[in-house]
Image (cartoon, helix red, strand yellow):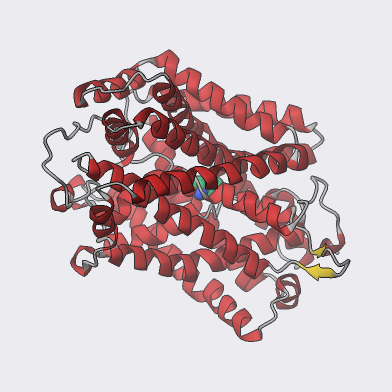
Length: 501
Ligand code: PHE
């Protein structure tokens, strides 16, 4: 039986390690970069509420399903799904769910590390004090200059890929567990320090208003769907990363008093989702006060993180120190996410007989090569487009708007409709039958419907003529900002990388 197999890749030291690893996966560029902007642009509190609802009603049930399939399968997503398909007497093509996940992970990894490279460069920009007292034009120039510099972008991409693959290559316990045990506490300390700083800043009240001022009029159908899409991207569902991490989750732990305690998937996933949401909210409460205190406009995507915020750091007292801390935080968040994105394809190669370091090097090299296309999309290849998108834009759209929703949908269908109920119930071992029934209804009906809507919407957005598409620009004019004298010009940067539009 599948559930008696010991995972070949290792088992996390405790339930907490799973929480750290899964939260590390979930907390990434999506939280620090995209969520704050989306909140402001989509109606503040109305959007936050919608997002929270989506996390609870769509994200958490699918995440529970994904972890459950992983723990039951005990292997890489491809082989876990194969095993589960056999166990349940269905066509082994269901292994395709795992393969699709590994493929989307591979594609996502290829450009996530490009953006990861930018964040590394910005740590350097902050530490070196290069931007201290720089003007808006200079800060924008630094960003444009970085993007135009092929070698710099490729160097960052290479370094970030190497960092990621080094950890994955060291193994689940010696690599990933060790990394998240250090990086996640560091991330939380940095977050707390920066939040403390933001609390004392003049812009805090404006920021609270910007993010939480209830304005139902701003909440359109598009923003509701954006909330659904973002909720499962931010929780890292649909790609197999969480399934792989679930495979390494222990079934029981021995408490200090020597008692055996079952590890509940439901409550563990809730803890991860709560951490992810908390980080997203706190990231907004760090970024916007700094932006508003300096009289800037909130901007969008890369503009917010890589131009507006550095400009604020350039002007404020101790900006060099806090700017450095901030970008170290972003690096930690992106790093623990890219590690989880790389794990499914690497684990699969290991099961095919490769040694882990070799598997990591191979996947790293292949993803790195593909990533060159994305890295060059901002400079030499920027004029080459297909369907109006650069190579980077295409990869971004394909993985996040198409492959992730499809992956999430298939996971929900397998867990809700295909898997034998007795198996699912045993693996979840929920204490409350009522809660179990709620989960089942969510995973069978509500979540698939929501995902189908997101998917249809993504397609419509892609195929609709430009005028019909949802505006990507936030309504910056309505933001409670002080005089916008020095608003940085938003350059020709992509709307969002690694995040659904
Ligand atoms: N959740 C990560 C973020 O918010 C991205 C991610 C998606 C990681 C899918 C793993 C799998 O940036």
